[in-house]
Length: 468
Image (cartoon, rainbow, N blue to C red; front, top):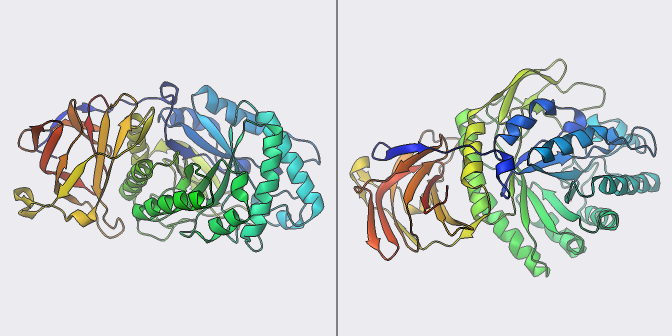
């Protein structure tokens, strides 16, 4: 980056200043009191993120049969809305009042209320009460969380059973609020098996969007899944939005949950976030959501009445974890991933959509490397456009983040159909650069050549015109 001329840094924008965005963040597990939301709201709003995933917590809301106490969830929803955030609600998990299985697991996690008529009827009443209560404040409702997991749909996942559950639940949602939007899916497996089986059962008739979760250090896996899911919905006669509802990396190993045993660190977490978020926005998801706002207890198989003794270090905010109580203690502090995500929220704030920028990527001799540019086959890249006509081009070397540390290289680009001032942004630290004549040549008629331009193992973003 030493050949570039730094001219400034990305100016942070809070969520109130951004009217529309494809960036989201998870504040899940508040139904299980995993952290203190009052210490998070302002920090999350300062990111400039827009979508916030919450979990509804049937068991926490209905502790006495037929009596719904929404005060705890009202506080979350209202605090988020007044700060310019858009909460969306995952309706999930069981209730010990109606199901002996739900008595066994902490938070009644993964206990679907389909196994007896009394529990099923109570679930549908609860859904109706929830949707009516939040009409005008919540538009998008997701039905359940990761129903193909044996720990989230006990005792045995079944796509036909889940599809029937979605159809019945979805109809109650629509009857309670005809303007509500329904999200189905929430699958984490790199597979179409459950989606296809559910679509064959007619679940798309009730769905307004489908969601999936992406936990893979290769972000290209998520890109391919988006393409496959879009094509699959069209084959079943419905072209509806795709939502990436959960992705993230831990900032250190030794805890619980996905990637808990992988050698990772705060820099790897940050690069994972940058690569996944940009790749998914370029692939056209309605929005993409990072898991999660804060480090917190992690064990979906935890038994009721016992503290969870391991922490998941997925948070953009870190905190000390007490394994004796399963609670966070001390201050909530910002990790490097927090600041990188804040930069992305500012860069991609407002209405942005994928745009097919004409580009040729090549590998030329590079004196900077005493050899050649990075092989083209190793790159991921794509274009975006804002409503004002300005454009951006993001590119990076999709290295193996687990085994390759601190990659730097170069690539050569020809980009056409763009105009206006040209800048290069490093979203890791928010630096904005002017590009010198030794790298960039204006070839006329909206065509620019960039020879041996810096390349990293996370997205660098070329902007044209008033993109930021």
